[in-house]
Image (cartoon, rainbow, N blue to C red; front, side, top):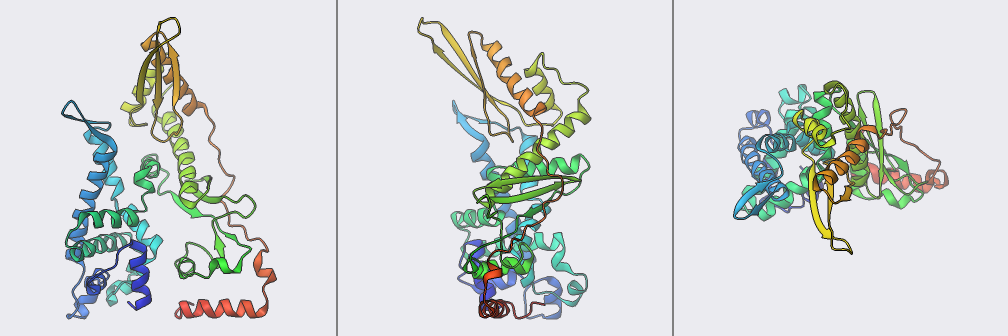
Amino acid sequence: MNREEIDYVQSSIGYQFKNLTLLQQAFTRKSYSAEHPEAQDNEVLEFYGDEVLDLYVTKLMYKKFSKIENGELVSEKNEGDLTKLKSAFVSKETLAHSVHNFGFSEFLYMGNSDIKNDAKNSASVNEDLFEAIVGAVAVDCDWDFSVLEKVCEKMLQMETVNNYVAVLVHQKSHELGFGEPLYRCGEYQSDSPDAFRSFENLWETRIGNRRWGASSKNPKTGLHEYSIKIGEHFFVGTGDDVFHAKLAADKKAYMFLVHEEIKQKVQAVDYTNPVSQLHEFMQKKIIFEPRYEFFEYHDSNGNPIWRCSVSLEGMSEKFVAEGVSKKDVKQEAAGKLLHAFVETAVEESEEWKIPHYYSGFARFWSDEQKKELDEEFNRAFPDWH
């Protein structure tokens, strides 16, 4: 790894190594060390990184789903749900996707067997590299967990944990036979030739996340775009940044998958008893457990009034009902939720969103500007073909 590549990795994970040899070891495959006995491979670092990830995700779920009430631990999720979520957070697909997005596998030290098998594009190899990097950080920082938490959060690109609709999409897509969800970031040209001169943008171009001179922001709307393909179905999300655009697309895909699962597992939706119907959906693992909150107050005549709100993972809206009967307001709020997620049509795109390239700034560049940017690109990536 050269200095530029080392700086890129450290900047991407948010950690500066005291011992750079450890970082290089994290990228060293066993096939390489077999041909170069002086180089230690990354397998033990993988082991340490795996253990760090387990603890990090477990602590994260504890803080998100659990609290102490009357001296006892109370959790929103049961053991089965937590186990499933933990497996998804640190799954091979999750870790490999992160490494692919960073482009880290380009820096691997590989032996001839790995090169022949194109190992750098293997999900298992990318998963191993993720764990080895975390393990190298653990050793280098002498197991300072505050440091490790920051690195794990940055590497996992925590949209799947802080709002884990993406985890649900991934899980349901496989369970319902649609296979692996496919993601594509929007690609639009900018009106400013200076917007893409950074090394990070050049690097994203090289690893295939975006094309040269492209941004995920649509210049017509000012919003970023992200697309998801589930089988032959397409969902496009927009937002003020890439994270929120992807989250919006994930929510559309999630609602589509919930509808599909209801068709497969439920003969008819019972609107006469929405609380019971939601409970059935939960038992069949179609949805997580609905969260009900009650509040009692008194009207101007001193009569007690109950307010019930209900929310569901994957939906940002809370559904509220008020009345004199606690049981009735629960049913009414549940009914609003049930109608909302069963009957609301999911917006689909007619096709996989193809990147749009407007004439944009390139049309106005002089030959000198074009030559300058070509030279800048070639300096950054001398081996680019």
